[in-house]
Length: 70
Image (tube, rainbow, N blue to C red):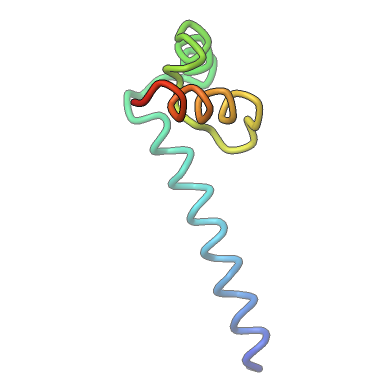
């Protein structure tokens, strides 16, 4: 096996593991996806956890914490 192929396989495995365990970490309370979303949406935008791909909300929280502290 060439080093490039080995590197690609390891990177793919790391990506799959990060996605798999990342989604499990968000759902530690055993909530369904719909319950988790409704729980997140019921929170104030400055109190919500940062989530991958949610650039607007993450930026609002970052600016809020930068201006007002944690």
